[in-house]
Length: 133
Image 1: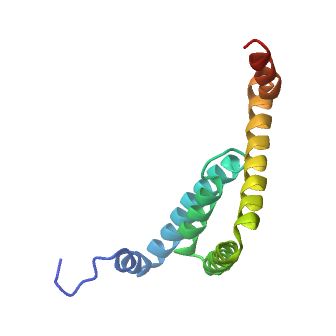
Image 2 (image 1 turned 90 degrees about the vertical axis):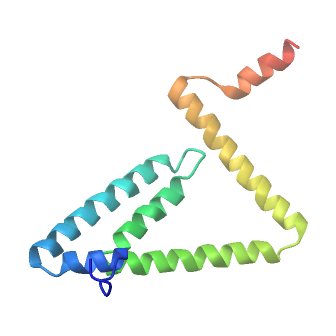
């Protein structure tokens, strides 16, 4: 590789885009990979873990090739940053309340997931376990 050639990912993508076949192949590849990552993230959203982060990763993959995805990714970044800055400015009781609401939401999702997936009621199991102690 010549010293003046760009070795970055952008340089590689530009070389692929240099031909009509490369442009089409790149759009199909980026579209497919991004769609797969977004679909996996959407399936994982109801469960505890990085569901939304995976969706945003898929959106970032799409943003490499599609302007609408880049705009949506920028919109998402702005709103996530404004939310985190708002939380950081709040006093401790408000932060605790937001944390407790988040904990209650995640707990409800875990309970519902286990109930639907395995037919186990964690609340009833917990009561039974406590009454036998």
